[in-house]
Image 1: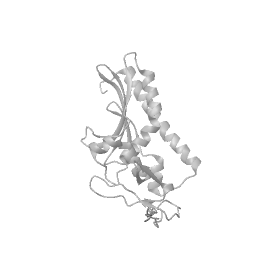
Image 2 (image 1 turned 60 degrees about the vertical axis):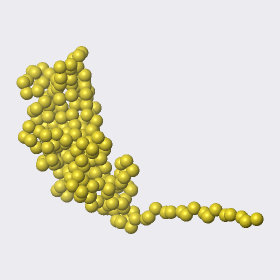
Image 3 (image 1 turned 120 degrees about the vertical axis):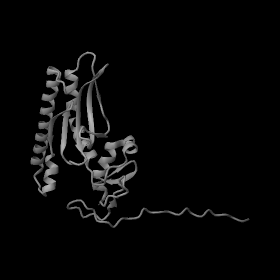
Image 4 (image 1 turned 135 degrees about the vertical axis):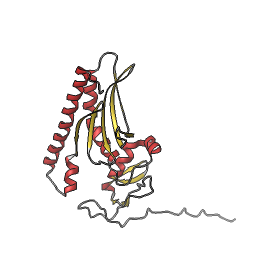
Length: 225
């Protein structure tokens, strides 16, 4: 009697990377190249270990480009294509908008009238400003049956990255470069406590100016809304 023996299935091991992680003070040699490729076909040159990279939809990215992919979502990627590899606008807008989201929604809800409701963007979109410059933005709106009553927008112009602008209606309410980005550009480092305090001060500056501008719109009803 002839006996047949099934040949064991081959086993494969994932290749082990020998790339040095590019994160500051990291000595791990298991880095993976960032998968980001922009609309012009240029690729990110970053390579980071699992601790300093992030996965989005099964692909590995550096933290900045992971933020870009999340900011645009699937719909945004299809409509606009992926931003230039060095464009931090979408991820920066999304970061700032996420941190302001609860404050702005509560603010608009607090001034809403009975027939008004609050709408808000979940993803960053590409828009063209009055000066015909393109910008990445996210917004919140107080609307009624006839249209938008109050609109709050966070945006970063493609040509002015990393300057963050907040508008209420068509008027600028606040503008500034986030302190953590300004420090990085200068090569400065601060203690975690100082970093946290500077971040709180920056967001307090934005929130106070947004609140003041919204109250002006609600009370004075200016013509520029």
